[in-house]
Image 1 (cartoon, rainbow, N blue to C red):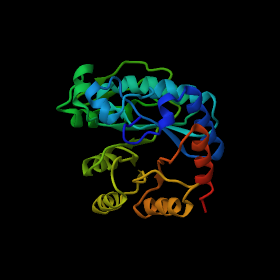
Image 2: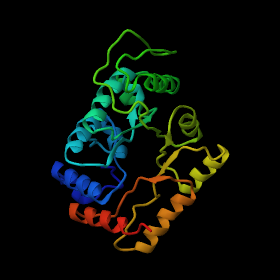
Image 3: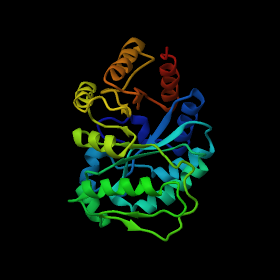
Image 4: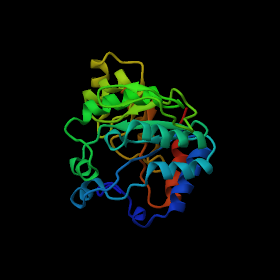
Length: 270
């Protein structure tokens, strides 16, 4: 529900609309669905960021039961809002009920007012996030995890059920070179947002074209029904920029039109 980007029909959208779109994407063979996290958006910030955010854990837990193969990417889970063991337990459980279809998309976070409201540290969130990532590597999919780091320290604990995936994919969100360095050093993929393909290509070149998953977004919604040639070119533009995956936005005017765009975009594949 970004104020400058959402479609009018989304203002009165229902959960059944979300389910229908997710099932269509699953049926067509799309790779992943995304769900963002905000706990409580301050009213002033909601005018820019939007105010409606389905909780990723509950959302994906339901969708796991009504889909077969599509993966579930938290895009992004704010590391500073959670202890790493909380993520390992809650999302490890999701990994179990989805049969290993979880992608942990994580970020450092940028909304200072929300950090303050939740009692989370904002000033050192970068260093804390790095340590949280190391702790997650040590604990996800592990029943008796142990980790000793700069911000998190634990041992002699049981976290069960543990995730199906011991090596769950971790995609790092963000916008700049620091997020890419974090992805190379501590993650499996880089999933920036609000960045032009050319800028992403420059950052990847400067980093030596690292062999990681790169998830890019087109700068504008694509319209595979109204302008399939332009839609196809936008996808090629992402590929040329270094994308291995694309997270797409569509021109859509109703839930049915959204599904039609999924179908039309699927038809663009070579």
